Image 1: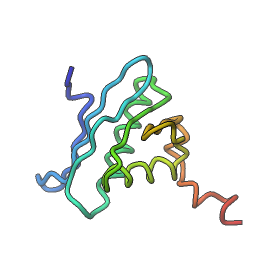
Image 2: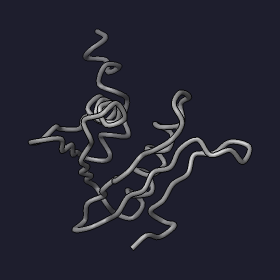
Image 3: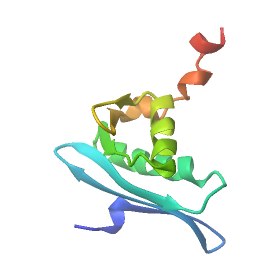
Length: 112
């Protein structure tokens, strides 16, 4: 079922930049589709808002399947940098609280 609580829109001054559609099942949060205009920094803000809402509903884990096209590989890179584990095929999953932390490349262990 498509409901407003599982659709997020990135917009600025009434102009839509991107949309994220997800569903929740078996205690997991499943981002299904992320689409939008190229460029800008809307994607991570939209993902962060959606994952924060999922945490608020008690969902601690996420799993998603990414297409192996340009958009999917960008999403996979974002999720991997934030602790997501790549599974067989194009599946990526992880722990939402870890996802909300700094990207892996920016942790003190990597810098120091």
